[in-house]
Length: 216
Image 1 (cartoon, rainbow, N blue to C red):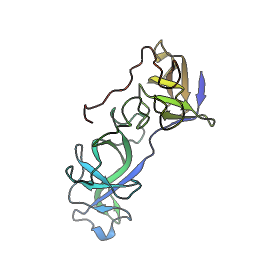
Image 2: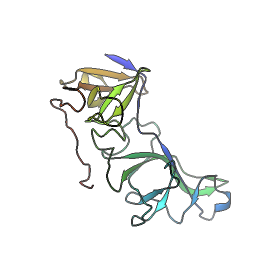
Image 3: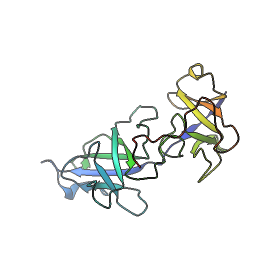
Image 4: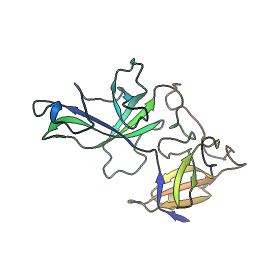
């Protein structure tokens, strides 16, 4: 069994929203935040605040600027990945709440977002979102695990398909070719199955691509 440092997930970007409720104002909100009238929740939509989509702001779902919908809000402190539902395309670090003494009085959250339209890189095997069952990955030279598309498009060729993510090696399914222990806290084990026939090849017993919600 290999032991490696960590698994690389989707790069986190930022949502910061300030809500003044009698204890602050937009003028003393932290830099980079956006004044809002009400908190965002599951089902609401967001739009990128810049061309690089390094930050998101509130937007109506019928606004042409909107690109993603919130599928979950997770207080992630101390939790082990995956944090978000299957089909999450983008993960962002977010805070929203009342402004108190120049800061937002709220715990950081992981915001789980799904694109309003295709593509959906967070679907199993598509190469994005969090590393979940059915995804493919490669192990880099620095012993980090990088999720890649199972068909080999857009990056390194896949080396393994993830059959399960478990707490112990003995919990891996019998089809596992190589358990890979992540030296995280707490430890996690990638139950890896070898791909057959190169990039995009089949793997007995492993599920492949599926749309999480039936949308485009």
